[in-house]
Amino acid sequence: MSITQEKMTAIAQAAWRIRRYAVRMGEVQGQGYVGQALGYADVLATAYAHALNLRADDPQWDGRDRFLLSHGHYAIAFYAALIEAGVIPESELETYGSDDSRLPMSGMATYTPGMEMSGGSLGQGLPIAVGMALGLRHRGNPAFVYNSMSDGELDEGSTWEAAMSASHHRLGNLICIVDINNQQADGPSSKVMGFEPLTDKWAAFGWHVQRVDGNHLPAVVRAFDTARQLTEPKPRVILCDTLMGKGIPFLEARDKNHFIRVDPPEWQQALDVLDAHRP
Image (tube, rainbow, N blue to C red; front, top):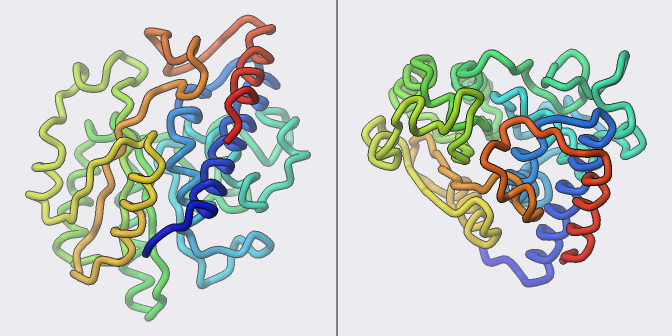
């Protein structure tokens, strides 16, 4: 499916707003997983402003595509995408991480409309996605299941058991997205547990594999479209290489961006940088 320049600009603007929402939520608490949100914004914008079939006013609509946030600590990024999609009102942004908020600091399905699973224990998303995809197929529901996960989850045996199961069951309605930013709590992901060559590994498990620059929007859009349009009955994975802190140079340059704390004036400086480069 060809994308018009007007549509591409609209997706780029959605990514810009997602980054901005995430920074504003970071400012509310003075800290957070903002680096991931900035790096992953282009992927989330493609999902929520282009690819996903959903109804903002009915998050539990049975015909919706399911988007699972396996990496629950990315919740700040996901909330920004849900705000952009109109599922959550922008006014709730100021409640992020507060008592009785629908936007807790880690993703909780019981609290947040549009949140399909409670994340936190990494490596659980793909097994759940496999079950969902099997269930939808059994019911004749044509919806897709998207599993969004971090490269740190490649350390988990449950991820690879689920990958093998998805291939065995020929789940053509399952799309996995892996954010490869090479950072996790204990250091560079590739040094905690070497995971390359990733393309070959996923292909060996029977998946259709694409690897793209996750911050190059046209490439991300093409990858999403290819994954949905593939006719071969096999699961699909999109490996997205991203840069933590993308769009804000003084955050991009930090050695450790897994959890960000900055001086109070820097939140406004970050917003000013984003505003100066609005699409």
